[in-house]
Structure formats: C-alpha cells, structure tokens
Length: 63
Image 1 (cartoon, helix red, strand yellow):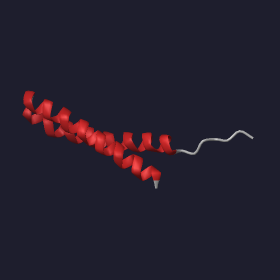
Image 2 (cartoon, helix red, strand yellow):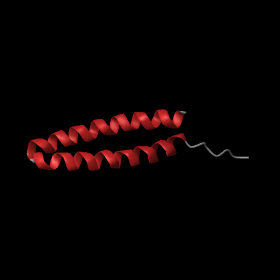
Image 3 (cartoon, helix red, strand yellow):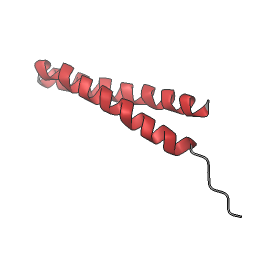
Image 4 (cartoon, helix red, strand yellow):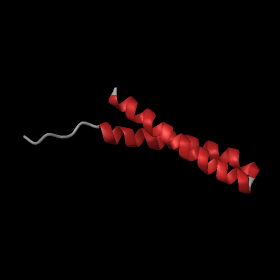
C-alpha cells in the first residue's frame, strides 16, 4: 500500500513539473508544447515508479 501512496505522490509532483515546463515551452514555441508535455508525462510515469520502488523496498537486515 505504501508503494502506491508514494507512487501517486511522485506522479502528482511530476505532473506539476511537466505542466510548468510545458507552459514555459508554449510561450516560446506553441507547436512544441504538446509533444514535450506528453514526452515528459510518460517519462515521469516511469521515473516515479522506479523511485517509488526504491523508496519502499524492504531493508536488508543483518544477521
């Protein structure tokens, strides 16, 4: 359950960053904003999953 919570939190943060970068790109080159946003969106899906798995992975205990 903690994996999903961390993943959703990271996705919200990533979507916000992608939105802000897409907004900045739109002001300079409107035609490039949608492809750039979509590329960042799908990149953040993958990056958020990798980070969430690493954050929530069980720690190895020394015996």
